[in-house]
Length: 336
Image (cartoon, rainbow, N blue to C red; front, side):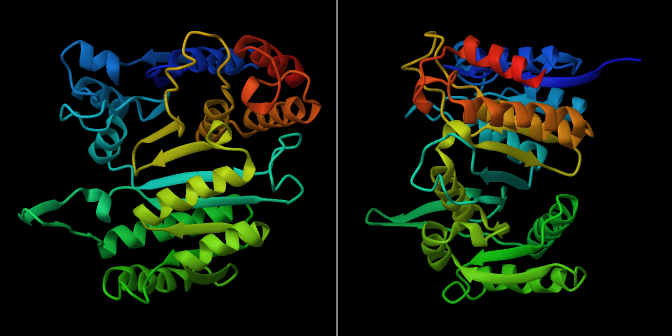
């Protein structure tokens, strides 16, 4: 039987190091695949290509699933974001960001039972990048919200809640001010919710949501929201559970899915062998579940929890002194 092909974009900075560690963990714990390595980020730019080359986009589209390390978007010079280019080209409309308390990871919320998911619209809203300057002192940005875009995002969030045994889906919005755009999003949310009467459906204004997240985060289950709000809220939630170094992410489309660490490329520690691969590893766990390898995913996720709870072989950002390789070896050992 042929191995499952998976596209791999190592990225920049610490990207190649943590990618190598994650692939090694997957292989040592029994998951076999044909890894197809693709170029993006600074390496592509140095070769005279866009940050997200068309050849890479075409390969991911053909393969259907990718694991992606962090890429750098240079300041100035007119270079666009590799991430944004990939999401737009493949219509990866849903950004999925879990936030879950990890045992042994010390934060202000260590004693709280946080286990929620943010489902963020990924292609519309102000991030469509439609801006113009009609006057030297006036710049405008156009917020684009479409009913089909709202519908598919909301439907995906309810289906995700069912698959994961969740009980509540909450729409995050600002419809009290943005009455047409956010109003459409909220209208579509409750329209779709009628098809899922066994799930609790409610809504919350985004500023109140942020306050509630830092006071009673354990009350939330699945949050579904627009692009800009989701960008802010998902990073806030990552902060509740230990930071972006522990935050997995997925970009889901109708025919493609890209799983990626959401943190930066950390060029200051690149090549030192101390980077924490947890975010990319947990993104790979999401990938395994997407592909139907739930037992394998659980095995690795449980191992990460044991390593963090034990605390004797964690990386510097988690208060330990382990190298990337030592952490990797311990995850493999704990996975049995």
